[in-house]
Length: 248
Ligand SMILES: [Zn+2]
Image (tube, rainbow, N blue to C red; front, side, top):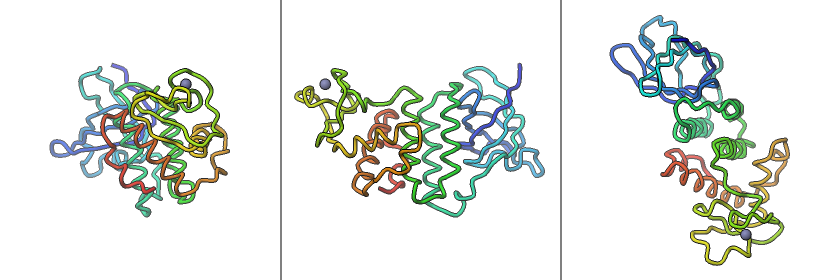
């Protein structure tokens, strides 16, 4: 059975037996893994610090197939994010990232771009000015990478391009995103987004750096938080536990 060495973000751990730990990690090479780390809590364990929550570690795994727990045979700390130790808002945002990676991805389903997006977001959570929009961008990256992205450019019903210069747009979870005015009548469970909010979500979803300069009023931020929160809750099948702690 070949071993795999990969960078990983530690999402969750619990203690088992006298000195061992079961860790759920999101690896760059093979996606989410739950693994038994034998003796990880022993004094002088070589894995000391390698399974700290929300840190990046270099992990060596023995992959045991889909049903059994994998074995974590090495875990050495590579990067820890100091802002998560001193800033509660940053810590909640970090836990939210871990919750999304844990609940939205499948075991052994690799998404290296999502790993990189999570790592960059964790690295910069200490910046209170851009923190919220970094989190929005991470949520949008999750949705896109996992094939859960709602339609934001084209009508989810007829496929026509939706011009965001209008006043108000219908947005439906069950209908898959934004709905053009012509298709709106008769569509179930729609929320309403202003053109400004729709434009902001589009800018946040784009590559490049325009999102940094985006003018976001507190009201627009609150609407984006509610909209993305609803899309993610719909994808998971329940509201993420950390969502109420993220602020508006
Ligand atoms: Zn339409």
